[in-house]
Length: 199
Image 1 (cartoon, one colour):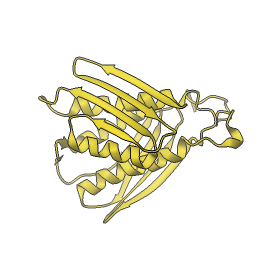
Image 2 (image 1 turned 180 degrees about the vertical axis):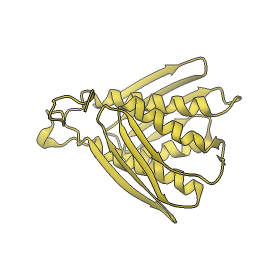
Image 3 (image 1 turned 45 degrees about the vertical axis):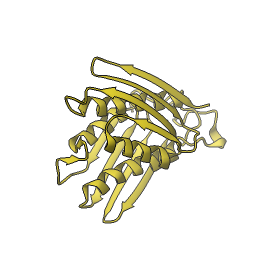
Image 4 (image 1 turned 90 degrees about the horizontal axis):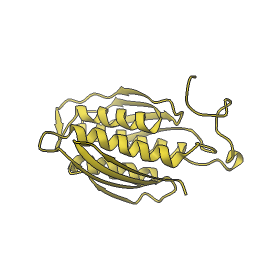
């Protein structure tokens, strides 16, 4: 069972996350931020990773801490579920269109975190969230999960479509990358024999 459970508590947030990489896309997400819940539900559904998130944060201040810490906790849970990363496909990529918008995500479960973010918005807020917080979520997730993650919206005008296509493309790329290749199920997908560290 490739599962992970993380409990993260700070003076700003209290978050519990459970993931199952071999799930069917079932989710139970409650962050207190409606738009973020919607995006995390999309992440689960389209990656087929079962996801439970229960978060309480200092939303009376703003959504920053809850957004960032949920990215950290989900990333940590995915990292935990991956274990030594033996047998995984490791790489994944996806193009996701949403009406006028097209977003591309390419990732490497390298255990070397890095984010390239080429996404622009034309408005400051979507629902309860500042649009600048979406980069913070992806940065936190990539760092905690050990993912080299490239996200680029190639074109689009509707801000809702832009964000949703980013999460859906991440989901589809993750779905590829976490799959186990039965031909190499006992081997780490690296000539070094380990993922992480220097190139």
